[in-house]
Length: 417
Image (cartoon, rainbow, N blue to C red; front, side, top):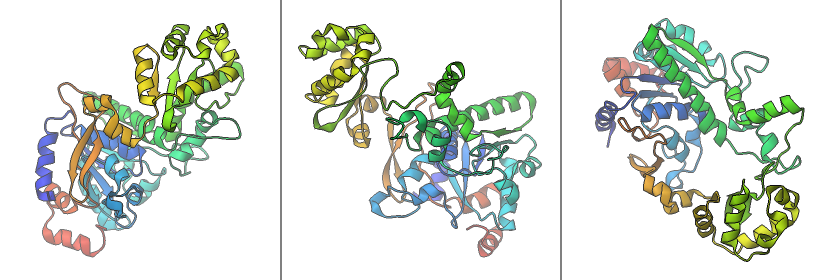
């Protein structure tokens, strides 16, 4: 399906969705910003992703790649984080490209970017420049540490945020072995989530007042919400939390236990009745008959003895089957799943229809995450991620009404690279 046929199909899909009629100028790169604009696009906003062939959005340069072929249009990471968008390639170092953006801006409701503070201002497409063209514009900046302060111009990625925010300080196994969650938490949950809430609030404010505004979402300040209880705890007690790996400060058994075939199972016993339920599943295991473990206080005190006994028991069982038995007995438990488990084995995810397969013009059928939010009247939809620059001529001609010779001149001077 080429761009000429895909565009009308996407437009028809958008017409019935909750953000239909909203146009977003998307300067975001990486994970946090694109995931926020992806959600808008999946719910019907017309999101125009601004890209450049000279420095592609770095997820386009990251695998895994379909067919093992390294190509900007074959990146699984980029494709998943940019569904339902349009792609316009411009080189903002060219004044002609800046002129294109300024011609497009008056038709846009929202502008999103997660560059370092001041980068787009220097290129001539910052809030001050574009809000003059559309006074009710909602402009969102997502700088790493905010626009002000002594580190306001610092750059980084999700890994940087994990260490600066204090997450690594509590997710390791001890002070000598720090292990963090990769980029997943700041990039794909809390940061885009806070940005989306702010945008929705600004849209409601604009509807009431007719006024736009500038929104700043400092990604570090957003990420720090994940360790909020630790901050409050330190302020009240003066004690700094120590890393516990997968365990709990308050409960046991609470953590990961190895099962047959080296598959891991999370078990979370927080109450004594849950312990009793676990023992009913475990049957004649020695720890079940030990009165010292009957209470949580006893289990915490005897953790060094109880933990290897628990592992010896779980090692005898298939993780999925043991999870089912524990859950049916009222004990929270979950298998540590991998991508194959999620796509091929998880019955709950399959029953919910979470994964959606969409045809991609280069990669063929691609499995996407479906929307985690289920709107009964206006459910979202997942449309194919764009090829690099796929919609450039369409946007210039159909949206901006530019003539073929004008577009040709922009190509000649390198403004559309």
